[in-house]
Length: 297
Length: 282
Image: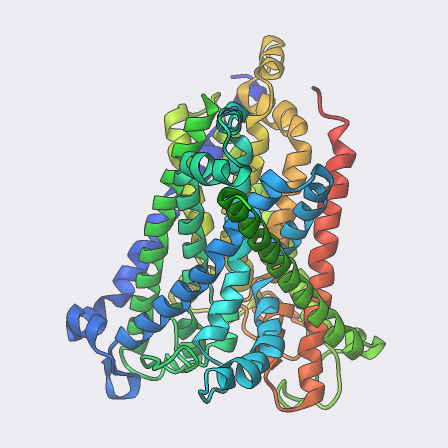
């Protein structure tokens, strides 16, 4: 065989093997996490893990309910803040803003998307924590250290902005202009066009943007860990400290080797995090593909 | 005034309000980093390693974290590039059935969304199995895994744009599909490849969760692949809440330098992409 053909053969096979390994990496991670969390399943039932609120690794109780509720609260509040603001911003940038302003605004979004999460955490710690402690909590007449659910949700919302905004802008500007023109020529105001034509046509992609934003917020570790307080209990108000799944892994790492089953419990937490994030990302990716197909015709 | 116009105006105000919130939060973040970071930075800060236990350090700088970050992120990006370009070239129609390729793209998209702490804990499991502790090499592996989907998908998107006629031209001259992929397609997609690699580098250098357990933390510059090392993100994470002002200042300075590096990477990405775009055959 010619030398070039041999090179072609080897190169192709090499590329094939790398591609195969990376495509199954996803399953490898899943099974390793599952296997490592098995010892915990043998000791405690799933019901107890998911519905007990008692998290006390030293005494062997690994109830995750408090942490789960903390995670859902932090993620949910962050999305409640982020969704309307991102949607309105996206609409403004793609429909109302002048071309020049649009060109100036896009790089700002890229900067926001590129800020490392630990820097978000640091800024939240320096700015948001005192703000929540000294201004917001007294306003609602509650005592708070500032390290709480609300602060974590606020910084998460800022981190989710660029994801939702850029995905929405991508869809809004891919929309066929005839649809908008038809609505405008029928006498609708611009806002009515946005509400009844654009939002309707782009619904799958807005849903996917929200789902992908949820995935990011749910899995965000460091920034949340720095401001959420790290108390694994159900928070009474949003101004109380809590704990989230990913943040728990980050803070518990140092101590986990010494306590029996602790490592296995953390693997279970990671597995839970992995499954939820992957589920929402798959949903989001499916919705995104649907819109792209709809507009590419 | 007409009710419909009123509604339109109300929402216009809300939109402007949202823009102000988004840009305002960006301004707060950049402003905080600059205000706190620029005042704590000095020549000593970037030329000395942190000495005397990282919570008690009286003097010293963050040189070990800067070098640690580069030692972690650059090799990881190199590895991720080698793997990523292999996969991205392989996803072309010339090698794989488009349906299988689209399935692999889908799995890469899912990998992209996986939180970095999962990569960290996955690498920790590998390390435990191999019997190595927190080390530079483990951090590099974690960052490589984190960067692979990012780099691969970005390169893949730019390879998709390569016109089929160009490949046909190469094939008609008798070149093999591997030669066409590495010599023609790779060159044509070069601006996209640079952008993808720098995107991966920016993400990798700023990530803390994946190197928290794998690279560990130390006060000195690592001398071998098996040493644990500090990095800018982990330095911020470990020191930001210290009661000692001089230690806290290290975290602020680290944040400032990290932001500078990320900004330089993104400017570089824009500049180089534009610079090499002129060699692309339209």
